[in-house]
Amino acid sequence: MRKPEEEEEAAIATVKTEQQKSKMEEADVAIMEVDEMELQESDKRVENQTKRDEERDDEENMSDFPCKSVSSTNESPSKETELKDGPDLLNVKRAVVVLTRLPDYKISALRPPTPPQFYSEDDSLSSSDSDMQWEPEDDSSDAEFSLSHNKKRTGRHATAHTSRMNNNNNVNAPEQAPVIISSVFAHCSNETTKVRPNLPEVEVIVDTVVLARKRTMRWQRGKILDMVTREDGRLKYKVGFDEKGKSLVSGHHIAFDVTPKLEQLYVGARVVVKCQDNTFFYRPGILAELPSRKNRLRFLVFLDCHVAVYVGLPLFHLVCRPLENVVDDIPECPHKSFMTQYLKDWPYPHLTQYRPGQSLNVEFSGVQQRCEVQLVDSSLMQVLFQDTQHKEWIHRGSMRLEHMARFLEMKAEEHRNDSD
Image (tube, rainbow, N blue to C red):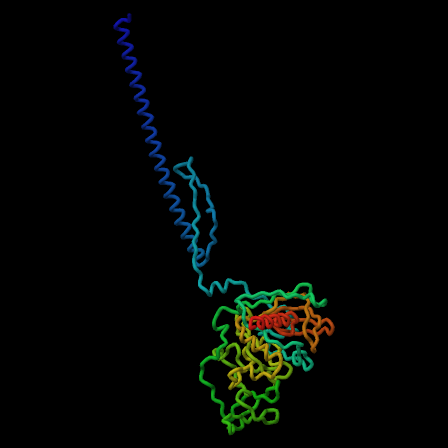
């Protein structure tokens, strides 16, 4: 048996051991609490530092780029920074993306400018910077063009319509037919309007200087000498021309001698255009395009001889008293049917899409001849006839284009089938 003293010592040792274990556990808990408090404080310092960095970056971004939009990304970039108070902790700095809506005028200014024209000054037929406007030569095929089939195209189409033509019937046709589109020409109502503005008529009196018709395709400057009212009530104007001669004409055969105002213009307006080779002559036509970014802020005019030209505002004049249907003033020819359908389709005109260097067939003197596209300028393109080596500007929706003529025949056939 143990002695009482040994048992007492053993009990005291056991008590001391339990006390030491209890103290160690308490110390561990205290250490853990201290670590947790330090960790929380470190997190707070990190969060405060991040907020300060973000606010500083925002201020820098807003001061350096007050109107510049910053592109956003799917992943936010991060940067590791070492805290002064916590060398073992890493601070993740988050980038802030600031998007600012720019005004429309600044967006327009940031867009790339329209590239300059490809053609030289000698070949420039449609530049708005030119003082003179191109005039077809006497032997131009535009003045006496013809087609074997004079058929109107239908106006039923969607906003964007494409059709590839089959050219297996003609061995001389290009290997790949162009795409014919009828997409919307412009997006602003003031660029597409074809309704005559409701403005008061400008008074025409005796001694008024006007541009009057002397021949079918020749108008000249003159002065109104007298106004005659016929028995049927029609008003006629007696005009004395500057270069000799007199003529009695109707109100739709005289034009104002002043530059028209923009609010007076619309697609379908009857106008006369100054000739290039003779500044005393003017050619009648119909306004086909108003200025827009798509045509480099120019006016497109279809002359009555089917020639399409881009002109500036000072180069054409408004007819004083146009007919209710301006197409009725065009002589009977395929161009009259073309303009009727063009105005019906507007602002979705049919246009072929060609590239420079591409070959095609174009009607010349009543015969389809081989050409090569030289330049493309908005709705016009310059072609080079291989046989005669002469160049000519032609509308990309002209009936003289073989593919367009086939397209119009196909549309007319579809229209007849639908009617049946």
